[in-house]
Structure formats: structure tokens, C-alpha cells
Amino acid sequence: MSQLTAATLSPERLDDFLAFIKPTSEELRWTEINWETDLWEARKKAAAVGKPLFLWAMNGDPLGCV
Amino acid sequence: MASRALAFSDPEVIRLANAAFVPVADNVSHLQRQKDAEGEFFRKVAEQGHYAGRTIPTDTRQGIYAFTTDGDLLASINTRTADRMLEMMQRALAAWEARGQRQGSAVPNEFMADRRFDHEPPAGGLILNVYSRDLPRDEPLDAADWRARAHNRDHAWLTAEELSRLAPRDPAVGRRYPLDPAVLRRLVLFHLIDNVRGEPPMWKAANVARAQVELVVEAVSATEVRLALTGEVRLEESGVWPIGSEGAPTARQRGYHASLTGRVVWNRALGRPSRFDLVAAGARWGATQYNARQDDLGPAPLGIAFELAGDAPADRTPPQGIYAGYFG
Image (tube, rainbow over all chains, first blue to last red; front, top):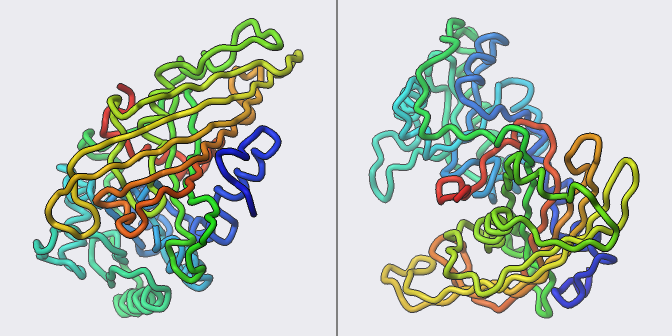
């Protein structure tokens, strides 16, 4: 997508910029994992459903800015 | 960020994570320091894993862990690649089978939580998704280079009081008014930052050479008010700091000059927006220690977009700047 610059940003082109900047569906595939966001709540759920836990632990929130 | 693009986007990783485990994502910086049962539980797991006992080069316990509700480790790894992730998951499931799929079922419902790391969105406020990505360049990077596809995400939080001031109480077509100063400060200092490839420091008030966003009422009906946003920011910092892997700080500059355009559709019955779209576009330059721009000092175009967040648990993830004076 060409000419997405500060000079071409306008109300008429707002959707073009949003479409370019926002993640694509392919880039959002990791959100198809049913991430719990609290380890203790996930632990309780795992005990209830009889499954082990799978923890993604990063410096910073893995589901936010990293 | 790269993990999201690689390992956790693999179809088999996704399938296995959802089918065979309870997947959870959390901030290891918190888990390692929490003085409560949750922190103790994590540390028990982590000290059986890939970074057990490590202090050099850092004491991070960052990684992916599969474990039982008793805290018995099944497998762990720190990787960004799908094949290694899958191998670890299969190892974990083999260990799970070997113990007859048995684990403790008695998990205390509550515990005395270390509140230093608890952050919830303001009640009745507004949550925005925030996305950042480099805009097209005259000389694009190699498409195979991960940096060409780099992007990041964050969340912005507004309080209920700030939200109530987003639209005028007596809207009239053509009326102009400035964006609430507290909201402007928050968006500028904490979200108009170059985090496309990593994590820079937030801006400080002294870095704001210009920041102005104005709203204008474009249409009014019985059910909604349509607002347009326009603005400009000029953010500049000079100082001494290291970039990339260099050890010694050196004289550096960074900045972002951008135009802003957006729209809000305000639902008058609900008293909140049904739509919020805002884009900042302009030139960024410079690098900071952890934003992976040491080979890309610019100036180069950067775009940042804001939209209404949804209702998923992940949408309640605190802003990156929550510990940096986010609400003033």
C-alpha cells in the first residue's frame, strides 16, 4: 500500500492506515490459543478439567507490549 | 513479540495447546518477584526448568513451562521456533502420560495476593487497543527480515471521568474543543512511542515540543454524535544512553513528529463510544537500548493506531507504562 505518510493521512484515508497498521489475521493466529491471563485462576481451571498447565512467561506481559 | 509471530502461530502448537493443556500467559517479571502463593508456585516450577539456578547473564526465568497443578514440571524451554516448541509439548505430554495423568485437584481458592502487581482497568472507563508498525519506506527492508514485519501492541486506559468528557454534553455541529489534557498527556507520553521492534523508555513531559489534538462535532442525531479528531505531536529527546549491545552510553537523540487523524462515534444512550479510531503517522528517528533500532536510526516513517478493545481477558492487559506514572 503506497503513500501512507504523514502528508497523506486524512479522514478519507484513515481506514487505509488502520488496515495497514493493525495486525492481520495471520499475525493474530497466536490469539487462537485460549490464553488464561492469571496463573492462579489457570491452576484452578487445570485442576477442574484434569489437564496440565502450559505457561508462557515473558518479561513484560506476553499478551501486551513486549 | 517474535514468539507470537512464529511458535505460537503454528497450527499444531495452537491445536495442542488448546486440546491438551490449560494455556496461560503471564508476566515473568512479576511472577519472579511476587511475595505470595502465586509467586512461590511459579518459582517452584521454574527452578525445575531450563533456567534453574541461573544468575548470569541475568536471573530471568523467561520461557514456556508445562507443569501439573502440584507444581511438578513436565517440560520447559525458551524458544521462538515452532518445531522446538512442539517437541517440548510432546515431551511434556509423554511425562504427563507416564504419571497416569494424575495431579492435585485441591487448589486453594484464594490467597493473600501481593498487590504491587495487580492492575485492573478503571471501572467504567475505556480500553483501547494500540498498534504500532513501520509505514512503507522508499527503500523497503528485505521481506524475509523479521524487522520488516515487526509490529507491536499495547492497551490504553481512560478513566470513567475522562471518558465522560470525550463528547460534549450539548453537542452542536461545528463545535471544536481540545482533547482532555490528561488523556492527551497519556496518549502522547505512553503510546506515541517507537515500540515496533522492542521496548523503549516512555517519553517525559520535557520531551514534548508540541502536542495538540482537537475534536470537532461533525454530526448529531438522537442516538449518536460523530466526532472528528485532528492533531500534531512533536516529541524530541537528546541525552546520553546506550543502544543495542554497546556497553557505554553515548550522546544520542530520538524523536517522533506525527500528524493525527481519527473519528469517534459516541453512543448517547450508553454514554460511551461505539467506535474510536485514531492514527498517528510521521517520522521517527533514533534508538534506545531495548528497541532494536541500533541499525535503523532513521528518520523513517512510523504509524500508530488506536481502536476500541474487545471483551477478551487479554484485552484487560495493563498498559506497558502502568508503572511509569501512567495516571499522573
